[in-house]
Length: 280
Image 1: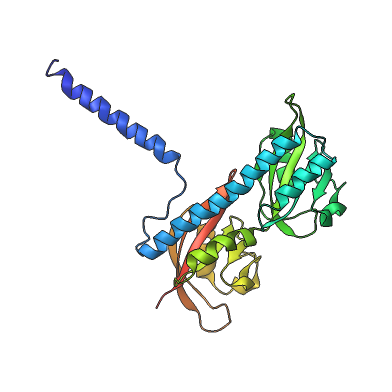
Image 2: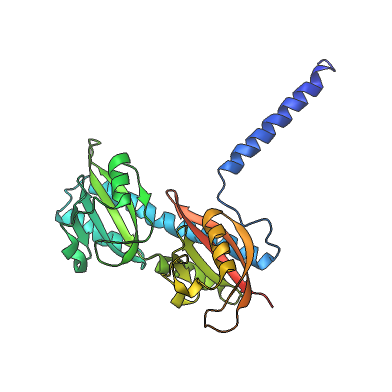
């Protein structure tokens, strides 16, 4: 081999390795922020991100199998109702499971306590319009569902054996319950509070239950803390980061707090997962 050719081969190989590493990095989930210096905070964030994502993916996988089975049955016969009932029993965070037709009308809901939502037209919900238009699965933000309470919905298309789209199946679940099953054990024994928020500022989970459901940018509880609101906007806009802010949940003297956050989610929907500790 020519001595002049060898350096060029080495250089090309190095570029290929670098490009390959770059593409691999693009496929990785949002990592715990590099600026987290507290090893406990970084480890807790990574654990929460991984386990919350795993819990969401488990719901999604069970729903996908159920949607496949529903494609072999009618949408409102005993077999279909059995599939929905079995799916609803797979996770305590699930409230009910439904199947809807290609026009966006709920055909069947299980368990039986939610039969009264059958016949409801849910075409106007954004995630329903998405699945009807794209025939692809989606997870909604927390919305007021047809059942009459705030919940999130994972939806999957239903196709027949002949690949005909006939409707969609949905899992209606409470994010707070799903996250609590992960965050409680993970944060137990640490000095950290855990908070999970939507990108619109809605608190999905907090170690302090009184915060759950609050809209950060609208609730008067937070109006007197401009640095908190500035950090909240960063959390909404940035997939990971760290910051410090002041807040007094009980109306007393504000306490300085460190926050580090990253992102978990499903089908493009993003939840910001944060760990928070008072600064001594």
